[in-house]
Image 1 (cartoon, rainbow, N blue to C red):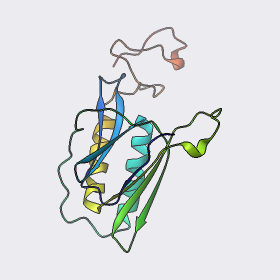
Image 2: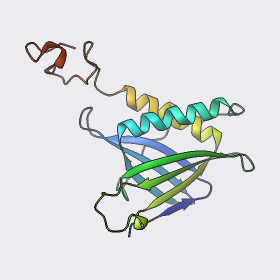
Image 3: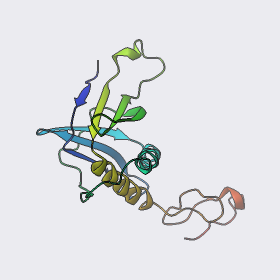
Image 4: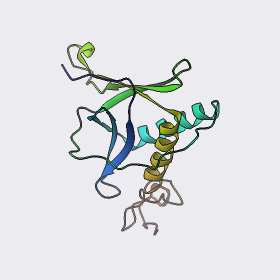
Length: 169
C-alpha cells in the first residue's frame, strides 16, 4: 500500500524538473508545517493542470499578491507517480483543492491500495503554480515547424519528410 497525504493548508506548492530538456523528470511538490510531499508527474500533466487552474482562477476574484515561483526542495524523492488528478474549489474556505491519485498498473490486484494526495492551497499559490508550470513547459525542446514533435539538438526524422531530411531548429 502506498502512502497517502492530506495537506489541509499547504504553505508551499510548486512544480519543478530535474534533468536536461528531452530527459527531464517533472515533479509536483507541496509542503505544510515542515512536511514536504513530492510526486512525479508527466510534462503533459503539468500543462493540463496549469490550464485547468488558470481557467478556475479566471472565475474567481484576482489574487492579491502572487508569490515568486519556488524551486523544488531537496531531497527530491517522489513518493509515487501521479495517474489521475481532480481539481475543485472550496468556496467556504476560499481554497483550491487538488486530488492526485497514484498511477496504478492495470494488472495490480487492488487499485484501492493506491496512494491519494489531497492538497488545499490559496488563489495566490495557484497563480504562482500556473506561472511556474507554463515557464517549465515552454522551456522544453522547441517543436518541429512541420510536424510539431520536439526537436532534438541534432534535429529529428520528421514524419512529414518521411525521414529523408531532418528539419533544423
